[in-house]
Image 1: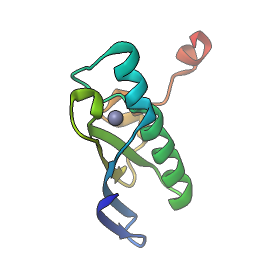
Image 2 (image 1 turned 30 degrees about the vertical axis):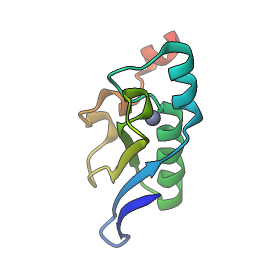
Image 3 (image 1 turned 60 degrees about the horizontal axis):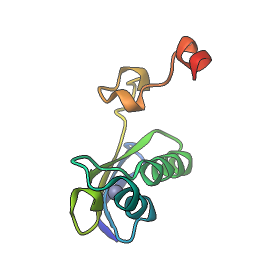
Length: 107
Ligand SMILES: [Zn+2]
């Protein structure tokens, strides 16, 4: 369910707040590993990020803020575009940093 949507294609801005109910990823996490203090719907956030980045033609990142594994009723995610002109390699969140060639050869 979309809670907020702000799109300006000319400025390259996309912001979205979304709530997801019934995440199978969260349910499996709770069933197998139990609750945690951190969100766990990595595949859902990655899928949404990749889909919206492809659809809009520039990087969009969905980051889960709360999750059912944290004993919340649902997953709440925020999505934002990367600032224009800022290479993804300089983003502060390391999970969105592209792998170096050395890291790719190890993975
Ligand atoms: Zn979740």
